[in-house]
Length: 250
Image 1: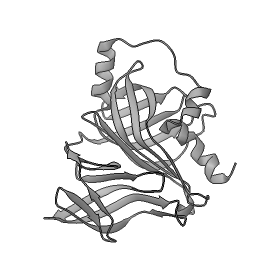
Image 2: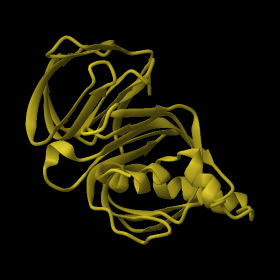
Image 3: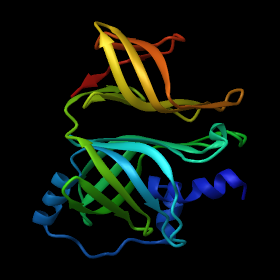
Image 4: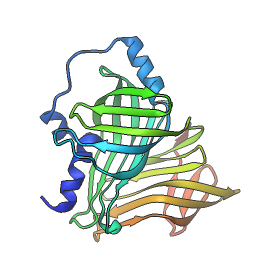
């Protein structure tokens, strides 16, 4: 196992790869409907990672990223902390969530893993499912997967704003931040950070950005940069010409 995959594998377990689930089946006990409702209320909002502890090994996996739970739609993006930054693995997800037997049931339409130094650098899966248990204390959130992997978060905000869904992902503009997740098995683009706009002209103040293509292949991590884009509510276009058509908005 290469160094990148050794660091990436625990987060793949978190992300919902079926292999991880089969190694650590989740408990069969069901939660009461009232408890499930409280779990949905608990995860609601926009959250920044504070820690990730891998199931089994208990290893702490430093990373920088965010997760959004809003109106049944979820999105996540993160890159592992470490140097060289350009070689760090990244993960992103977009999908849906609902009440589940452990608290919250997640279905990811896009499950994206990027390992810049590997060939191919991009791993993609669709329609992956997980059940998670949830604990919340004020602005602090803990979610635990069946594998035992635990993630903790600090609340950024309530997720106020809009989610624009594309054919292969989404763009969220919430709490003064953007969160972009889009792609398929051939190529992906993901990122988050604050944004400023004047009309349809946007400055994306990137905190973390990761993209990859298996055609080439190529992969790129960015941090602390400003990217230009335009968005009129119907088409989101990056400065390099890549355009994403809105299918629906929430």
